[in-house]
Image 1 (cartoon, helix red, strand yellow):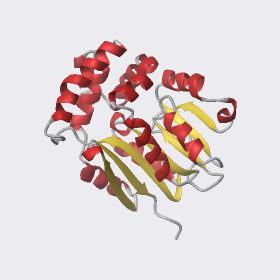
Image 2 (cartoon, helix red, strand yellow):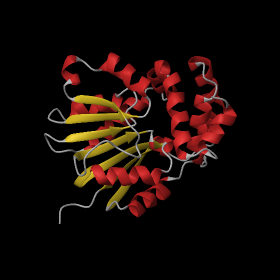
Image 3 (cartoon, rainbow, N blue to C red):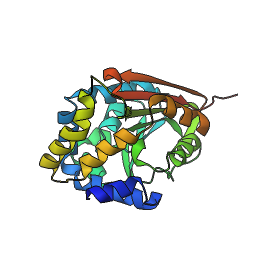
Image 4 (cartoon, rainbow, N blue to C red):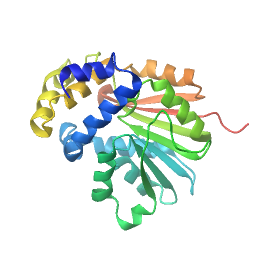
Length: 250
């Protein structure tokens, strides 16, 4: 994907075209995805995903939706923290799920984690069937986000939580601009040299910079119909954990 294609994926392209382009892009970098996640975050992504799973709090025996599951790091963490639960691991990029299935799903986990290719705007799940939902670094890639919020609300049980792990907006100076330099220069350079895809990590940087800040995202979730919303900053606001609850039983 070229830089022009990446920009069109976030701009003039239709939501369907955008989704196909993003899925194809992640499919091309699937082989390097885990390594680059760990390397580019200094290993902090492992802790971030732990915190995400910890916030989900499903009840024993329930199924948890892990949307934009990728290679299923969050799915595996959810299964580890909640041994009585099952995980529906959904992602639009089939190569990501396939790589995760080969590398991370032991015989025991294969009976509890179920990878399925799916569009986050049209989930193949029954109403009020999920005890919690997570999405790590994926809500930026779904357009329009409101469609995904609506689907989360539809499939969550009353009182269940949606937990979002996402980068903070790159439009705010963090660490005296060092993080912004990292986004603009180092991230695309390193991602290009290792993954061989010149557009993938440039796309990542662009979507981080254009993403709403934590207050705007909270407002989006409230406007979508969630009853209680809060967020927790990590690494000086480079990453945020957002938690939104569906209205509980009356």
